[in-house]
Amino acid sequence: MKILVLNAGSSSIKYQLINMENYAVIANGLIEQIGENSSLARIKYLDKEGAEQKIEHKLPIPNHEIALKLMSALLIESSAIHDLNDLDGIGHRVVQGGSSFREPVIVDEWVASEIERLIPLAPLHNPGHLAGIKVSLEQSPSVPQVVVFDTAFHATMPPHAYMYAIPYHYYEDLKIRRYGFHGTSHRFVAKEAAKFMGKKLSQLNAITLHLGNGASVSAIQNGQSVDTSMGLTPLEGLMMGTRSGDIDPAVLFYLARKEGLDIETLDRVLNKESGLKGICGINDMREVGQMAEEGNEKAQLALDMFNYRIKKYIGAYSAALGRVDCIVFTGGIGENAHNVRAKSCENLQNLGIEIDPILNQKRSSRTMQISTKESPVTVLVIPTNEELEIALQTQEVILAHKQKLH
Ligand code: AMP
Image 1: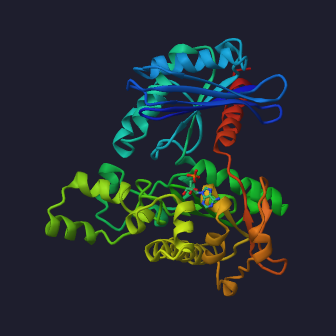
Image 2 (image 1 turned 45 degrees about the vertical axis):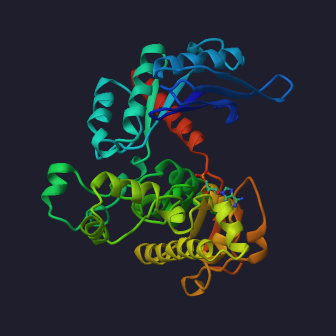
């Protein structure tokens, strides 16, 4: 079975073709700057000899329709497929599924209209996803297509975790609540953690930390998300590359009154100019770490704040869960930055968390334990694979759908 995973944004489309027999990536690529003159379409794949090859075209790509036609042409040119009908399924990533979608679903007109209805809750993401889905349905009508939502894994949160303490009618009228994001990643690493721990997912209590440019943490009880740090939008929670994370909302009123900042400016400041970048001017954790080592005080402060926030959430979610079997670090920072892992888990022995400094320095492309043998809570580093998780869920939905039709 060959499944194509599509992550369509407003001006870019990432794609990956996966062989579901062995979960190998057959090809992956990117189409960038759609709508501009300097667009780029790229594919990377392994040739018959197993050597990595790349094809790249620079040309104006005016819209998603042309972008997806180019992607098909590249998949055919690289011999990954002969034509689009070779695909057994297409899995679309959608960031915001609101309260409508608790699980991945086969795309139909109603599903597309719901994704459209949810645009006000994800104005930066859902329009691009929708454009990708519509064009893909037109170009490959005979290939089953599934949407996998970032929010769906968190649909199991209880109301006391997802409600905000603001007038109730805002929830009823406008559906303002915590939704949570990165669900595909939290779900994938929770499944991998359960395998590593020799438990069923339904028996696992875990705190999963997805630390990348965006960062979020989830409390997972009996395999289900019961709380997560991102909220109505991916702005809440941990400190991130350019996002503030948790902040007293009154700071915004104060800035508006004192500095005359309007809503658009405040939105930009909190989403694009805050986080690591806001404190030390740089949002890339590698550079921030390097600057801190060289004695840059603001970089050190940014790092200390980043780690302290993680530690606070580990404490909060340990309390929420009662029993924690494991803590999982994932994402570009979680998988690579051993100093972040060490500092955010420092002095947490009374919560049963003890990292082995030597194991923590190791690198692995597989699940790796970094806690001591004696540590009651196991601490793991697990490389996330959101594309594979989308492909697995797409496959599951397609197979279940076929069975229902028989
Ligand atoms: P992601 O969004 O998951 O791709 O993660 C991107 C973040 O991971 C950036 O802040 C990178 O600086 C960070 N990152 C990647 N590799 C390393 C590394 N070796 N050490 C520290 N941070 C890293």
